[in-house]
Length: 184
Image: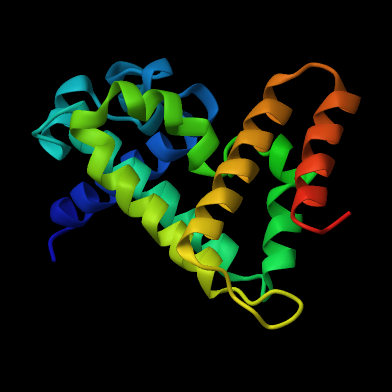
């Protein structure tokens, strides 16, 4: 492979990784093509050589990467309790660029369904399957409806816990949801 072709691949990968991080931090609408391009050392025109279909193509690939990374992270705990405990932790709440894409991106995705809807749906379905695959402390697994309830309650609690200024209130939202699922 020629150096130029390899550099093109590396630039594209760098753009997707950088976009996934910055979208988590600023939201999809909070970062423009010009800033993304500048961050990775590309020109505005260089961006369109990498992503001929424009920002929608980059958004879809960056969101897919976010879900892939997060799926890998949630695959590590061996039990449902450990997944819930990790998800509803202060560390996860405070993670700016490594947090779950569900509470971070839901508002942006709802405004960009045309370019992101299918990617987001796929990510959600993978998360549900992952939750359904984790045994609880009695070696039982949950059905899809319970997994939906779990994901919705955890993502909602995390979204609120991130948004409130009052640290005690934030912790109480996380604790209340852990309690709901039998952890406190």
